[in-house]
Image (cartoon, rainbow, N blue to C red):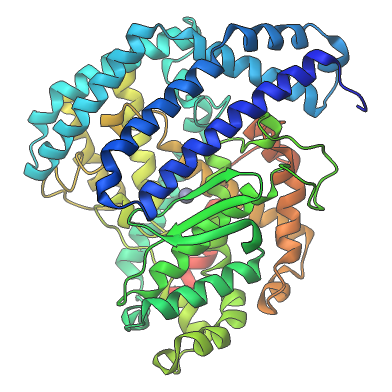
Length: 515
Ligand code: ZN
C-alpha cells in the first residue's frame, strides 16, 4: 500500500503518541529497578501512577475509538492480509477490551489484589494457607466477574483471561497438548531419577568475579547478534528485558560469584527477549524488513508472552546448553574467565549444565522438570476459576499433584501452594505461557534444524546469523500481524504439538544421565 487515507494516518499518529507515553513509563520502571536511589521511591510511585492515568485516558479516548471505527469501515484498508488490516483488527480488539470493564470492577480488583499481595507475603512467611484463603477467594470472585465481562458469556471463562497473555488461545486446546506432555515428561523425569547417573556439576560453583562474568556475558550476547548500539545490559535484583522503544532495548541481570553460569544463562535468556524486541519493525528500517515503521501499531509489538518466552528459552536452553555452543564458547570463556575453568572440555560443560531433577520450587526448577510445575498450576487454576475446585481443597490438590508427577512430598505450604505471587495479583491464565514458550521453542528448533542441516556446525563456529535471520523472517518482523497459533503454523508448517518438546528433552537428557 503506497499512500494511506487520512483517517489511517491520524490513527497511526495517535497510536505513536500513546506508545511514546508507554516508553516514558517503561523508562521510569527500568530506572527504578536499576539506578534510582531509595530516596526517590515515593515521588517515583506518583510519577508512575500519573503516567498510567495518562496512558489509560489516551487509550480509552472516544476520538481513538472513532478513528478505529472509520478505518475498520474502509475496505481499502481492511481487505486482504496486510499490516494495515492487522493493525486495525488488533487496535479494535484492544480498544473494546479496555472499554468493556466497568470502572468499579477495575478499582475493586486493584484494591483486592493489592491487599491480597500483602496477605500472601505474610501467609507465605508463616506457611499459613488459611491466612491467604479469604483473599484468594475475593480475588477469584472478582477475576471471574472480569472474565464474564470480557467473554460476553461466550466460551470458557479461562479463555477470556488467557487472551491477555496469549491471544486467541483456548484452555481446551492447551489441555489437549498438556495432557500427553505431562505424562511423558513425568515418566522421563521419574525414569531418570530412578536409573540415571548425574554428571559432575562442580565446575558451576567455582568462584568467578562478577566483572569477568559481565565481560563474557556481553561478548556472548554480541556474538549472538544483540546490537549494543540499540540496547544495554545493566544490573538488577529481578532480571528482565524491556523494549523501551525504537532503537532502545534494555536487558538486566545479576551476578553471583559462586554461580557464574547463572548470569551467563540469565543474560542469554534476556538476550532472547531482546533480540525479538530488536527485530520488530520499529523506527528506521534496519535491513530485515521492508515493512514501513510500525511504531505504536500492533504490527510493531510482540505477539504474546508465549512467543516472547520461546525466544528467551531457545537461546538460553537450546543454544546455550548445547554441545555445539560450547565448542565455540569454551575457548572464549577460558580467555575471559581465566584458569579456573582450564580443565573443562565442551562435553564436560554441556553435560554439567543439563539437568532433570525434581524439586519443589518452580523458579529454581531445571529445564527437564520446569514444565511439570507449570502444567500442575494450569490445571489447578482452571479448576478454581470454573468452581470445580474449592480453595479449601487447594493445598491437598497441590500436594497430590507434586507427589504424582514429580515424586515429591511437599513439607509445607510455604514450599507448596504459597510459593508463587501470581494468584495474589489476579494473574490467572498467565502460567501456561511459560510452557507454551518451551513448546514453541522446541518446535521452532526442530524446524530450523530440518531446514538447515548445517546449523550445529554454524553454531560451533560462532556463526549465529543464520539462526537469528530465521527468527527475524519467520517471527520478529510480523509483530502482531498473525495470532500466535497462526504464526507457529506459518513458521513451522504445523500446528503446535507436544512431540518436538518431548523428543528434544529425551535426546538431550538421557545421554547426559548415561541412559
Ligand atoms: Zn523470560
